[in-house]
Length: 310
Image (cartoon, rainbow, N blue to C red; front, top):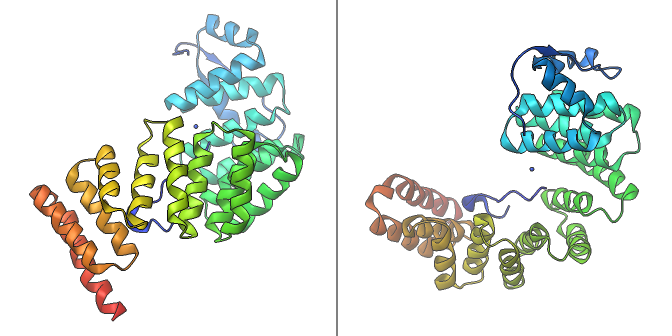
């Protein structure tokens, strides 16, 4: 997933085993040592655990790696992905998972090297191209992201993950008209994919089609009613569409009343609705005096922005 990242309010318009003991080493794929990956295969495992891992089928190793990754146990995620690659060196999903582990650690350059090494075995893998495209986008290289994701989409034209990643990059490049049909195709392929409804709603917000965005955020919430990002996006759409009452109610479900008013003020500020923004920030202060610093900073920001716009 990707799940689409929520845009900050004041900048709106805009993814089993606990192992310990002896040491085991996973055989390296050609090119791993040159990348400095050989040391990743060293972890504390008992002989029993070592034997158990070697007997695991690739599918189990991948499931365990994904579980460790989700739980934030990056070293164990890496060892399981490497164990899977020992059995199947051209396994694209394992290379992509290993790269994701490095990215989570903040080692983006190393993540790129992992993907490039994986592509030597699987040059036409849509999985690896999509992973590279998402990673390049996160590094701020939008044109490189677009190039990789377009190649991935040509190889897997009905892959929802690839299409959604490509659409997000188009949005960030300001090409909302290219992103919209991609989001629509994802929804057609997977009607119950909450992120696709949310992302199409964000696309509409970027196009200033605020009223059309609202039902999309509502549908995303029907599919994932615990997602506060979707609630905040819905509240933002209400505010931008001129429905302050519903905006405050939605913001209030995601946070407290003071923060709800502050968020509303940020929406108004992004629209250069200075009086409404100022009133919202003052209401935030009235609702919670301890909220003073943040709301006061926003009030000061309004003065500066007003002066620039006059």
